[in-house]
Image (cartoon, rainbow, N blue to C red):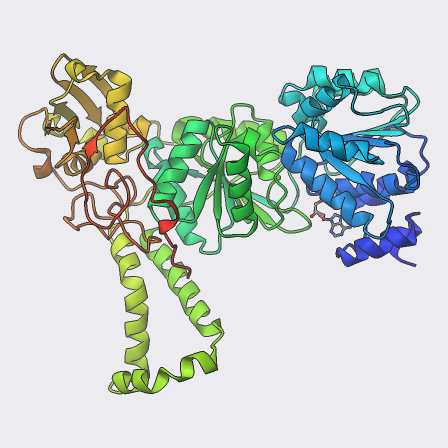
Length: 610
Ligand code: AMP
């Protein structure tokens, strides 16, 4: 007898889940299944996503439902469309061999008419997001009188997302004689209120400590200067050639910006946030699931319910406003028994927040040092060598070309050949990381600028004159936008801005002066040349070499260097890129600040896979 059958699950279901690879019940399944199949208990399950909770409630449901009856007998409410579809898929897989089983997903952003049609055919289990479910109830398109079980999954998330009233309304529409099973990663007051109002004598299961991250997640943080965060992100990605991660940002705009920068720098990344249409989000998720993307840049809300099992790294580009969300973020990795790494990129002023999160997740964070250029190169090189070593060779396909190739290479020894082959692939990377600065900041040091900033003379203050102003319809915000777009610098790298009628001043960190001077060369605004000069007199190009990573900030290297991962290169290393993205030449365009967003190059960037 299979281990799930021993817990009371029917053989026909056990067969299906064995085919899904479930051999041993997870701890939450071991505790929940025998109790829930009795059909007379309410439950509060404090469990993170990734613990196997879908099966913990889904398998008992299969036992309590009469699949010969087409009435709706169970209702599962969850916060997002993603999770809704995931749960539906799981339940459909569990009941693969139950012919009459019909499980329907109801969620916003898709045709309600189609969903009404599906429900009207008769469905034993509805999996729904709260808003759409309320809509269906109001339209009297669902019959709830036969409901035996209501499951509230990720209850805390649903309340976070403002579904409190919807939940109350749904729960009050269902028969009072039912079982309510509530799952939540945390137990804030509002969840406790729902439990109290709608459940009687529930039994509780806690998998792991409440709020605690899974044991198999390693938590790390890197302290860098605020303006180096993007460089740090790239350093992390380059040091982990097999990364399959989620990068969390705080706002939709930041999410979009970081994703665009990564794309421009040749990474297989894309953004997931609420400003995208459902279709766009689906397409991004499809590419992420299929691992065509290896970095998903997301907001907390958009990433909720993402159920992807092999995520290696969760990167907190910025910490969430609500510290509780850290647990949700980090829980995206280390799922289904795997291990994972949760990384926080932080500046020295934010270090105190680490202590707060440590308390919340009950785990110690390790302060780690970002690898230097040599370490990154070494890691990438070994990765490349391993790939070459293991690459499958299609003898038949290659056979035809070999004699000619052998002839061409016949004067090279094995050693020479290896050296040349590696150099061909690796020189760009070595170039890129040749002068890579140490991005680490000593977190005990109060002054973020450090000695470099302090030693700058007035002339190197990073203050710039620019020959555009109010007469060009610019204000502080649009000028900052324009500077950021042209230079590819982060918004927080641009300091004070003074907009006058026909000219303006803006400030950047002194070490970024070179980048600014270079980036503005040849730029135009509404057909007029834009002139930028260091306001202390003299040209900023004569200033000391920028510390900016990638060498393009002052080495005079032309476009095509830059982001290592890029195959079809536009210029620009970390913190530096030519405005407009696109081709390999330093193409300059007429800049229209109110116009279209800069192109991110779309699918053109084929990351070189190492
Ligand atoms: P969940 O917490 O329900 O999102 O489940 C996390 C992942 O673990 C899903 O991909 C499930 O398919 C998988 N899973 C759940 N239970 C088991 C089990 N007993 N054995 C192996 N994998 C499981």
